[in-house]
Image 1 (cartoon, one colour):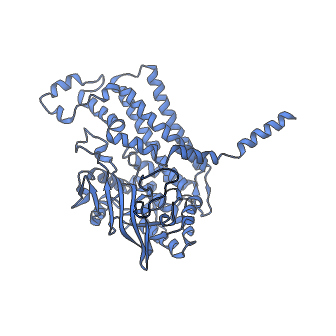
Image 2 (spheres, one colour):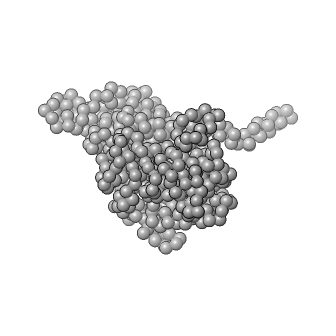
Image 3 (tube, helix red, strand yellow):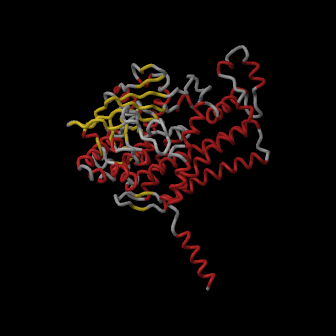
Length: 481
């Protein structure tokens, strides 16, 4: 099966019947019918349909090197700069369907899988079978258009620098047994976004680091593997009404705690185990981080453009465009959008082949994009709140408009340019983007997408370009002469 349709995606996940728990109850029946999952699964299905549209064919698909059939561009190994551009354009076509709000659209993890497969020789350092395992799974994923979630964060029991888990009680997921048919994993991991509604879950250490060798593993297993359990946070899709919750009703990507209850991972699904060195090499020698930053930043550009559009819609609705402070705020947002665009283009223009033959964007502008966005996003949220002001707090529901108080609302909630119901529709969009539980989660999510900002800054500091001090030294020498 080549690039699949939305219906094929829904049917595949329904057949899996994964072990998912929401609000204290196990999901039963077709998972795509569950009230808390229906919206986001329908939105994901829509993405698969978009890639099959004739007008998107050349951007969103390419010919499989195995079968010649059209497969998803998110699986494309970039070997030329033009391939990076194609990947960006494909990501942004998908992102526009959600305003960039689906942070775990399939292309994110597909990019990770492509990068790991391209550098699979790293896994052969432990066992040649493990490189083959990665390549076989990647080929299967590409040809069947599978989607993945992932998890790599340990439970936050104690975040002090000296904490070592009490080994009398297993909390963080780790290898507890090695059998003839695979490794056995016990414990928990956090934050598998879209967990339970993907074909597979990829598991590996955060940043390549592992506190002990039993936590240094990498593997991928189907979402319905025996012993695997997904426990959801509280859903934010409180209402079915798209009018009342225009974003959360469609794009709430549930974040899952993943519990491994003596899960057997077959050897053919293992990439490495009890090997901290391989874990570190995967991060340091593959290009998966830079390639995922390229995908994520491409999506984030669309998200900021969407937020800029919301801000301008508010301005036009209540006619506040005459004020200088509004001009300043919109200018600030435009500069943020254009800055991210420039960083992605700079990364593509200065891209080069890595040791695995992958065309990789220049790391410096990609790192700059990672550092810049967590500062831009909360500011965009703040600007929308400042423009909307009290109007974001006075929002009736669709049911109110259909009740006997509807005439009052039509009179008192009207705007300068649109009638009351249209005004509320626009303001509810801004509210759901910046103030609802869904909107607040989006802000937290984007702040920590690539990790703690201070730790990232430390990494950025130690990758300081050596030519900068050299330039100063040369200037000083000439001055002395």
